[in-house]
Structure formats: C-alpha cells, structure tokens
View (spheres, rainbow, N blue to C red):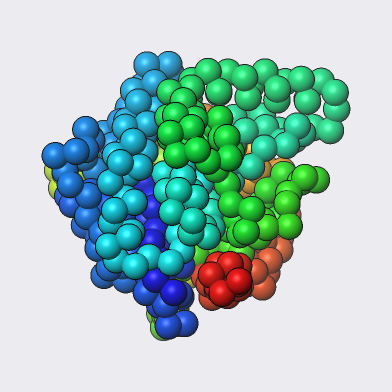
Amino acid sequence: MRIAFFSPPLQGHLGPAAGLAAALNDRGHQCFLVHHPLLDVDPVFKSLPLDPSQCEWTPASFTQRTRSSGLPFGVLSLVREMAEMTNSLCRQAPDLLRQHGIEAVVSDQLEPAGALVADHLGLPYASLAAAHPINREPLVPLPFLHWPYEDSPKAIERNRVGTWVADKLTARHDRTVARWSAAWSLQPRQKVVDCLSTRADISQLVPGLDFPRQQLPPSFHYVGPLRRAKHDWPVTENKDTRPTIFASLGTLQNHRLSMFRRIAKACRQLGVKLIVSHANGLSARQAATIDADVVLPWVNYQEVMSQADAVITHGGINTVLDALAAGLPILCMPLAFEQPGIGARLVHSGAGKVLSHRSESGRIAAALGDLLNRPDYKARAGLLQDEIRSSGGAPAAAQLLERALGRAISG
C-alpha cells in the first residue's frame, strides 16, 4: 500500500508517526508525509510537500503558538493556526494524493484533514492518537483537564461542563471541519472528534495509563509506544551509588530555565544525582547555571532511563511512556495541553505524583523522596512496564492497519 500520513508539525506527533511508518515500511508498504516544505522530514517518509504560497502558517509559527498557548487568548490563537493548517491541507492534499497514487491514509487525531481528504477521495483511513486519545465518554474528563476519574452523576455533570467550555474554545477548528464536510458532500461532521476512524483508531497508551473506559468502539486499539527497533545498551559500571534522576521538559517547554533550576536544587537537597536534557531549549550559558550533575542538549532516552531511578517531567506523553517502559516512577509537573490529564492518569495508576510547575524546591524534594522511598510507586510503574512490553508497539499497529486498510482496498 501507498499510505499518506497527516500530522501536526510537532516532534511529539511526528516521532510516533515515524515509528509506525518504519514498521509499515518493514512490511513492504510505502509511507508518505503531507507537509509544509519548511519541515524537516524524517527519511522514513517520502515527501508530499504543500505549496507554501497557499499556507498561512509555517512549522515555526505553529511551534511558537504551542509555546504560548495560555488561556484564553493563547489557546484561541493556536486554534486559529490549527484551523488554517486544516484548510491548507484540504485545499492542496487531494491533488497530491491523486498524483502519487495514494491508496490509504493515516491521520493524527488532532489533524482532521486526513480523514476529510480520505473520505473525499474514497480512500480508507486510520486515526492515530500520538497524544492522549480525544475519544469522549461521559465519565472520562477531557485529557487537558487535571480532574480525577469519578463514577458519579456529579462527575458526569462536571465533565459535561468541561467539554462545553472546550468546544467553545476550539469552535473555529470545528467549524472548519463542518465547512469542508459540507463542501465535499460527506457524511456530516461537526467537530474534530467526529473525524476519528471507524476502521482503525490507534493509541500509544496502554489501558493501565488511561482512565476506565466503557464506550470504546471495536476499532480502537491500545498498542503502547510507537517506537523504532530498540538497541540493547551496554550496562556501564556506575561508581556513583546515589539514586539517579532524569529530568526533561520535552521539545516545546524545554526553555523553562527557572523550572530546571528548582528541580536541580531539590535534587541537591535530597543528595541524588540529576541528569538534565533541555533539547536545545537553552543556550550553553543558561544550561551552565543549572546545578545538576549532567546537563545536555540531547540524550538517548532509552540509554539514560536504563540508568535512572525516577523521572521528573512536564507530562508529555512520549516522555511518560518511555519512563514507564523502563519501569520508572514519575514526578509530573504539567505545563500545557494534555499534560494535566496525563498527570491525573499517572496518579490514578499509582505510578507517579503530580505537582504544580510553580512548586518550589522543597515541595519537589519531598515528592521526589516519596517516589524513591515508597516501593509501591516502583511496583506500579513495573506493572505498567509489563503492560507496555506486551502491548505490541509499532509492529502490532502496523499489522492492525494492514488488515483494516488493506481489507478495505481489496474489498
């Protein structure tokens, strides 16, 4: 199959998509990425570039919007950019897909253009939840909310009001979906969430990291982290007997120097070793002001986490999954997007704790001390590690898509 991917131009989404594409390539398929030409495309994809003169956005402008997405104006600005990205994809992608003989589509849950274009062209498509799934249920709070899971009428009403507010904030993107659906005479879709595939809806989560679900369709599949084949890193002798902490704020919030400094001060108070990765979010001069044992612009997560005892993170889904894949308890300090919801699900799972990102070093040290000294956190993280190991990952997702999309093409 010749499969076109649609994704937001963010590493947190493109990385899992590339992991899935690599597994599909291994099975003899060809994977393409529809993208802005200023985006650096992973070589696992063949390139389907848009005409930039017809795009009122760039990867850089989109990234900037995500870094300044505070309520309400930052969110509204980001939603406006997302709507324009969907517009440009819907305008240009049909011709691109026809020209390159595309037979199927994989569309990120947060980029509905893939689903709309696929339906317009009569192509089968799958959805990919690279971030937390947006699938809705009355008992499950939306992923950007920090609310805990509760099975009660009060919780249902609370979640309903939260969903109503969210829909108001994202109305511009939803109107874009409805407009293209009507223009192409498709089955009516009113919201982004209406564009999820009924053939295959793939999530990076495992059930143990989600709230209890009662209404997921048969097409939904938890497959765990979508990563390429891992290497076995050699075990190096560690003469430092202190517990090792790894801290990362991902690729969008990696510029928060004050937060890194407070984390480092907390680790000094506890007497533990700290490794920091700032993903090129800081200058060398700024990085030198962090009182950690090791501060690097980039690290190999698998290698570093194999040496760590706990992780401190903003709660980005990929960092959280990589930590749990290594069996590590997590201190989550959410900043934006689905991170508050990931934190709430970590607490529900028993594998981590949550603090405000404004917490001072004393509170960080106390929470981190709990994670290191109470064995139940490590035990719960170990259970999730086992679940991730048996979830199948990218190879399982590739098989699911091959069956679901290939059957549609041949049928």
